[in-house]
Length: 272
Ligand SMILES: C[S@@+](CC[C@H](N)C(=O)[O-])C[C@H]1O[C@@H](n2cnc3c(N)ncnc32)[C@H](O)[C@@H]1O
Image (tube, rainbow, N blue to C red; front, side):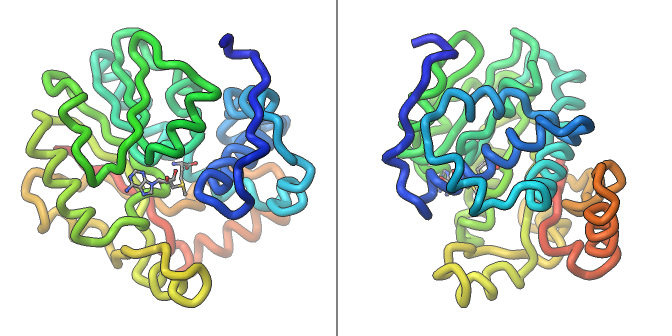
């Protein structure tokens, strides 16, 4: 299969985890067509072009035009931190946990010396394999991050761990164990991830059958869980709002960023 073949995703069930991955893929692709994109994820646009799916229905559900910025501003900050790490460590190993259909491995254009691992649940990786193949420097691993998969990853390189939209779906005990396993196994590197506030699991009990399990008031507390983890930086999801081209949406995000709502989904960068 070449990277231009059409792939049929019509059996992805509306509302499933795989569908949520198509939602964020679609929003990133949509934003890449903007004259002044924040993320500019052209790899997502290529993927959407290749995937046969009911994109018209997706468009009605996602209402792009106003909804893409949450996804693209979050991805952009995590991309910038990741790119900065890869500039300093062109021989890095990257663990992209809960990758879904995200194209970070392609849109960052990592040097050939980087070994990139996209990790997600087996069903998600099976779908992802319809789109992409493993190749030199790029591998997909179908496993829960809470299972045994780390044995497949080399340990003798600086290691970047990226977890976007993942940790809130684990229990606190699973997050603690995962962070411990990562810092026990790898010599050093950085971890970039988002966390939601404790409001996340509370709202989820009412709105989304409790799928969001873990929230934390201030992710800096994680330093106290694990002495290997050193806090480096933090940012709200909306911090890049000044780059939104539409004036009304810029104002909306400016207001969000000026209220406690800015603490709902926070981006964090740690060294270990
Ligand atoms: C909200 S999606 C985010 C996907 C992608 N990071 C993005 O931003 O588009 C959450 C992803 O986390 C994955 N996930 C949830 N729990 C997981 C686990 N225990 N192990 C591996 N992946 C998991 C889901 O399968 C899903 O692909």
